[in-house]
Structure formats: structure tokens, C-alpha cells
Image (cartoon, rainbow, N blue to C red; front, top):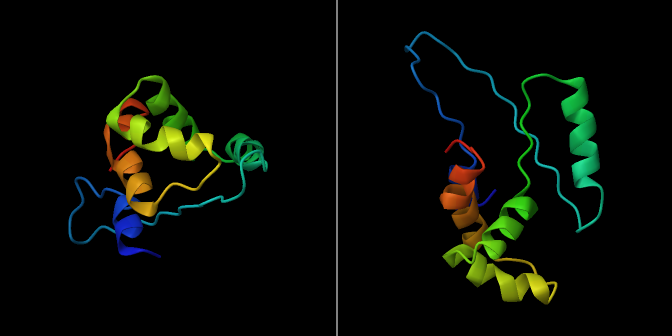
Length: 105
């Protein structure tokens, strides 16, 4: 995994003492646009409590609609059907869009 992506996906460990252990699981569902990632995520969420669904596509569309800096950078690439570079996706994950979508970082 890319170090920048690994850092962006870290799970916060708040209020833990040195003797406490936290076990977490992160599932990353990848696929082409319209490939069913959202559908399978809904199935997972309906069967398991405690999971959170984060859609970078939803965040990006929101950023484009709001004409944010990230949205402006992503718009042309998205309209041409291209893939956004990793550094822009990390910015999406760590930036204001993530905060508006209540994503911890």
C-alpha cells in the first residue's frame, strides 16, 4: 500500500492506555464506476453493526458540486472518465470533504 494512502486510512486510537488493545478491520472495496461497490457495501452494512460506508465517489461529486479546490481539480478528470491521482484522493480523504462527511482521520 502507498505510504500516503496508508497514512490517510489510519484509525484513531483515542483514550487508550498502554495495556489496552484495539482490533480494527478495514475493508476496501474497489471496482469500476457502476460496478456494484455501493450495492455490496449496503449488504455488508445491513448484516453487520459498527461498519461505516465511505464513498469517495459521493464525496467527489459533492466537492465538484460545491466548486471546492478539490472539486475543481477533480472535475475535468472525472468528466473525461480518467482516474484521479493518489495524491488527490488522499487530499479528498483528509480534507474538508471528509470532514463534511464525518470521516475520522
